[in-house]
Length: 101
Image 1 (tube, rainbow, N blue to C red):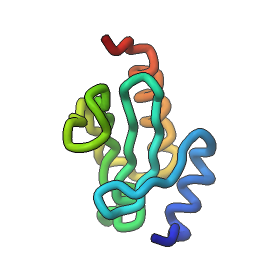
Image 2 (cartoon, one colour):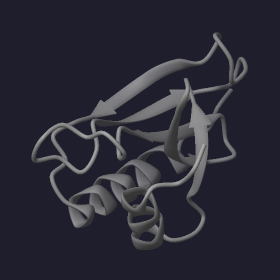
Image 3 (cartoon, rainbow, N blue to C red):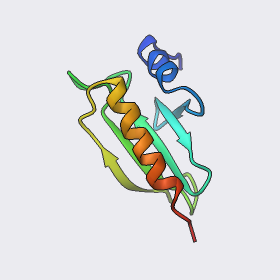
């Protein structure tokens, strides 16, 4: 899959350590927190009108990154890249501090 201009713009705005990863047959912004949680930004290439993305999902991947992963939090209604960055920063702060047992 080819990265669209919208995805490139979002990736450039978020900066490292975010990457583009194909998840469920779509390109998403992705961040592995390396502690049993991953963050996925879905729908940048086909966001609903007035939104920068469809949703942000935090995944608990302690039992694997396949069908055993479970969603622990969603953030929706993000309208701009600065709002997306703020939401991602807040999620990172919240989930980086969690210890996975």
